[in-house]
Length: 393
Image (cartoon, rainbow, N blue to C red; front, top):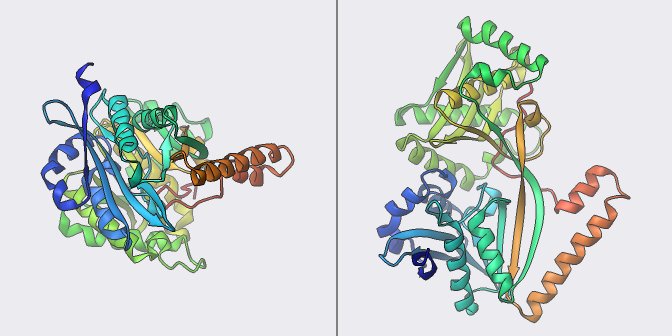
């Protein structure tokens, strides 16, 4: 443990300087696609605004091995230097955390905090969105900073939901309610076993364009009349970002872009990532005109069976408290937005406003309708661009 107490940090502010450490970074993030260089550097390429500055803190052990990194960028607005996690804008990323070697989470988090304390002129506020309650590395950073005079605030937002997967599909069915279990078995026999529904999946880069077009078409079907013809993909930067990420993850065999076909026509699509332990259900789409086939349930059946067959232990439905997630036996994990200010007049003023807001919201919770009270307690509702739509159709 003594070696872990003497970690060194270095600041990198250009992607060119990071090139030499990209493979080591990829290895550290092998079980977290949304913390990989393919995801975060692509996000930077597509979403960085004029005035933004990359602020990557890399952590090395005494033998110059990369053991962690804090993927940040600096946003300078109205003389307020704010550090945010890469992936924050447009809420692209979930499960935000520092990247670290297994067992090094707390030392890496402490090393990042020490770096920030030694460079007070480089930041006024640190904002981290969509942080899980068990994000040990970030929690170590927050604890160290607040112990050394910084001001911290934590606000709970929508939970992240995940299904713990057993070893077999039949074992999973036993976890479901009797009615849903019966429905799943009937759909399996009626559509999959009979061959009436065919599962197609992008396997090679030549298939990617077709798969992405299916995703855009069926995702858009759920957003008609909202002023966003392609739903969340109406944003050209968001769409281009995911086209880039999908291509990278396909090459690394971490992409599941799969759709169901009935009579040669797609009726449901899933855009997901996976690693050795987890499938992440990022986006989806349905043909609402095919409700008679229950395309949402069929798509969930196919996706969960895929995860079990891959030997994954978790099917992650990401953020959002939609009721359908409980039906599939997903369990919630608390998720937070974290803010840390350097101790200054401005920092104290902003910290006080946030704490006052939280206390007022908590006091009003007993007096207001539940939905409005929940919004006040957790902060203003935000539509994250990643996350499974309701598949109960």
